[in-house]
Amino acid sequence: ELKVEQNPLFLSMQEGKNYTIYCNYSTTSDRLYWYRQDPGKSLESLFVLLSNGAVKQEGRLMASLDTKARLSTLHITAAVHDLSATYFCAVPSHSGTYKYIFGTGTRLKVLA
Amino acid sequence: EAQVTQNPRYLITVTGKKLTVTCSQNMNHEYMSWYRQDPGLGLRQIYYSMNVEVTDKGDVPEGYKVSRKEKRNFPLILESPSPNQTSLYFCASSPLAGAAPAEKETQYFGPGTRLLVL
Image (cartoon, rainbow over all chains, first blue to last red; front, side, top):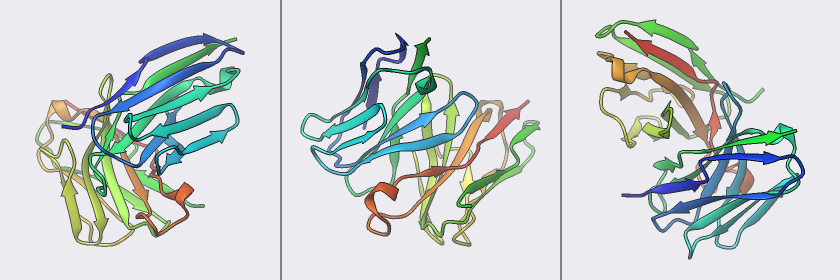
């Protein structure tokens, strides 16, 4: 059974600091997705990682995928309060499928 | 505006009273899916559909039904709701792999439907 584990589950950090959120998964998949959810809101797509070694950056967020290690990272550079949200990674349950497994989420709080 | 809509947004019902949550998308996506979100459990997939008349079970399909008679609509049906189906439900749609630029091969989520079953 595929497991998708995120850590940390909760993260409180000061503005201006850097940090990394990790997403480990237990199956062979060459696709991984990151989403953001603001409190009381829906999910919005952040990054689509479609191959080993993929790296995507948007503003202060950078995501990478290592399919051999079955690991994706979401790196936050110089955090600002607006990044406070819950971040989810999602992986297909096996290659080629559209059955998705989500991590339990990392709740990020950036303190001013 | 490209969007996924869900109705109703909030629903309080009683055990055993059949209900339907509608989902519609205007992006001509082949793929649609339903999730439930519960505290501490993240999102869990209920059912998904890769095209009209093609549906498949996700991780937690028990107690739910779906149908895909039109490309744009994917209703979620609870024939006999129970309190353990109290949850926040999200519908999502996406293009299939190769049908869109890579950065758009992601799921677009509806606003959510909060369901309370008494």
